Length: 155
Image (cartoon, rainbow, N blue to C red; front, side, top):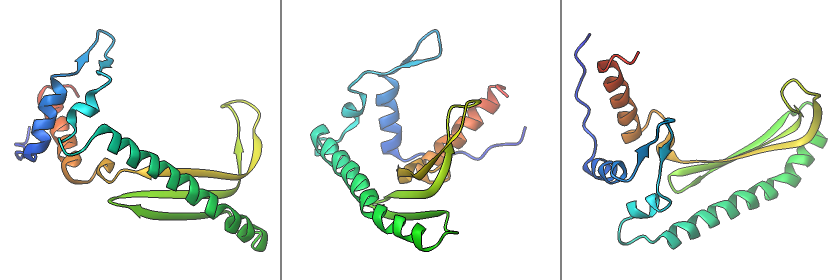
């Protein structure tokens, strides 16, 4: 096996990891039991759970409002251009990104079941910047897991 480069995480990530590790437990079925207040326990003293909820509520409201704002111009664009299949938009939310796609139509239905056309099908997302697999500390943690699994011969 080739020698692996040491991966160094930021200290605040290591500290949060230790806190979280002390709170979680894997049950016999492989499901991690997580206390309901886990996230709240990770918050710095200057940020309350209510502040987090206020920001989350606002992000949800902006996501809904921006889709609503896009709806009429998108429908008008579909009417004007019969070949246009979708209209999309995205915008920054701090370091995150919110986005929408409105499709002219999409066939929907249960797998193996009857499909029906849904017109004006929309998809909205709020992507957290840190969740990208090739970014920052999350990328390092993913590589650490891969290295540890390789060393433990899990593959």
